Amino acid sequence: MEINIDFQKQKSKKYKVYIDELENLRISGKVAIITNPKVCGLHLQRLLEKVSADELYVITIPDGEVYKNSETLDLIYENLFNHKFNRNSTLIAFGGGVIGDMTGFVASTYQRGVNFIQIPTTLLSQVDASVGGKTGINNKFGKNLIGAFYQPQAVYIETSFLDTLSPREFSAGVSEIVKMAVTFDEDFFIWLENANLNKKEDLRVAIQKSVETKAFVVSEDEKEKGVRAVLNYGHTFAHVIENLTKYSHFLHGEAVSIGICMANDLSVVLGFLTQDESERIKEQLKRYDLPVKYKIDDVELFYQHFFLDKKTDQDKIKFILPQGLGNHIIKNNIDKDIVLSILKEYSN
Image 1 (cartoon, rainbow, N blue to C red):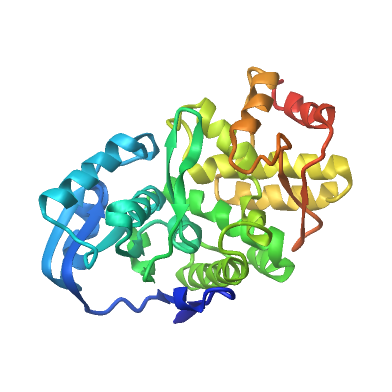
Image 2 (cartoon, rainbow, N blue to C red; image 1 turned 45 degrees about the vertical axis):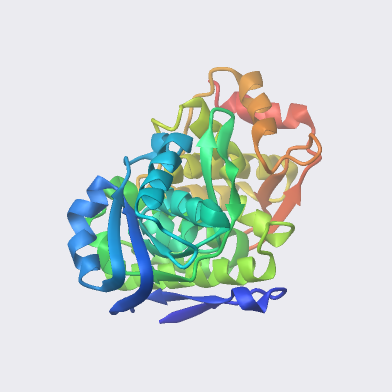
């Protein structure tokens, strides 16, 4: 299956997302596969049987969100310079969202831009992170605050890579699927309520629907000036949670699950979502063992961390909220006391 990413304003940037169509890739010039030890041990040999190049290198970097930083970038850059990569070279991101984000950022900056291909191996990266060209790293101030929009040449989603995924990593990807359905497609959400993503046939449909949704959104709004911001549903809260826990306690999708629940609580208070709809969303997250609770130790500190988020606009916090099922609303003028009242519910 092929899904087109066709930017409305820049037709030259279009590319395809291929689902279960990874055949032999012949790439001219030098190619570096950037991966981590875990993915390397599980899947690298299979990929090497599919990819050929004039010169092919493998760059292995540490695994985990805590390594998504400038030190790891320097490790990648050093390898590329040592092997004399040039502007005609290609990078392949082979791993989850962390690998994809860092590889894309290196591709956007190495000699002012080289080609790169996404081959995601986690559910979260297949349904969300690998599509749309967001790249970046974390620093002490927050998540993905240093980065660029830089599109890949292609994305190859192979669902068989998910066979070795841990239950926890699998669940983390489900939160992003729920995100897509709640904010854009009520029929998709109802389908999810009756589906079982542990079944391969249902999972493949969910991946397809998620990618099609994201393809539509990013094609309309590449650089998040409008509708693409809706894809941050749950993330405004999640990024604070990740930062306060130093990216070491929750997987990204787990933090997003909690963030979705917090956003829903806020939406209920403001009258955009019913309590029943909120509970239905929470039930979908709980079905796949995702966390829906988090204890806030310092409510004011949590609130102030919102202002470190790149989505904050002129000192106004931008909240993405569900408006019923399958629709959304963006609010940046919510009274602080209302937000604090939600946060206090998570401090007990």
